[in-house]
Image (cartoon, rainbow, N blue to C red; front, side):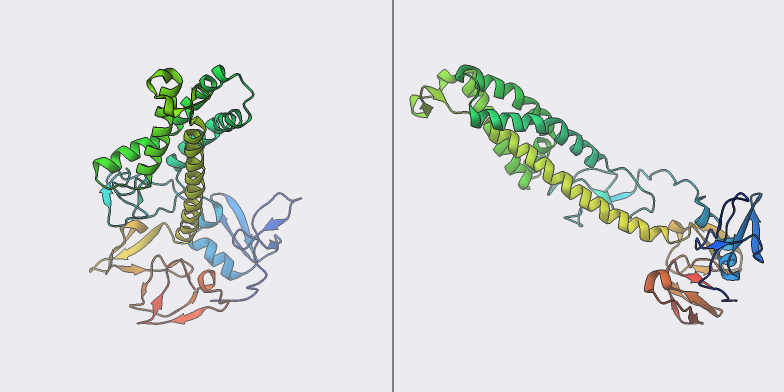
Length: 330
């Protein structure tokens, strides 16, 4: 394998008045480069034989032509990030902590997080209402007979709509006999809201010992702020988990989409990477990415592991050596 001009890569294609870029490494090249090929009727130019070899082995990796992701498996196993012993088929919530379950096997394809979208919508739509209730309760800008009714009107959407997922999880925690933080959140905000509604609508049922200046105190601001602050915490947590998931997907995208499996009769067949099993024999052609971690059964080669180890020089591999998935076979 030629290593000439390894650091002076790549060409690409462009109009005559545009600079050419190597689709593998992004370096500038000219149409005079002896390293070029045609793919789907388009000419591509490269800075070195090595870049040309990589491109010919897997052009989709450099042109964004990866096949569409397969549909989600309805029978996929989901697990809880906090309680990995909890597993079930399909999405749901953890019976112990109430968190949304996540796929046990991560996917390389980016997926929307419906829980993050839902909680973000509930938080931003009701945050102004929570702030208004807090300000009204502290500043007392309204007549006393009106203030609690205004707080009731503003607090109701926050508690009954924005806080609905929390109450559902609180009920589930009691049904499963696993009290958790959702139990406390549900009881705290729910009791404060129900007590305040009763004090506003039927204040006469309360004894005089609970009255101050002839009025029964209400706690709408406590109920709404519990909901809003909990939503904020959940949004921040889900965003952090989403960033972690994106880092994992970036690593998974380094792997090829297919593997060449060789059967006992030395017949080769292409299979999706997800179908590779322990004990399979896989053939890796020159310039291709090694699909999974494994052991060399036959052959010799130099493997580029720079994207994982940072080592710029290829590593010699022979029978019995270990290889790393996503590294490039020279």
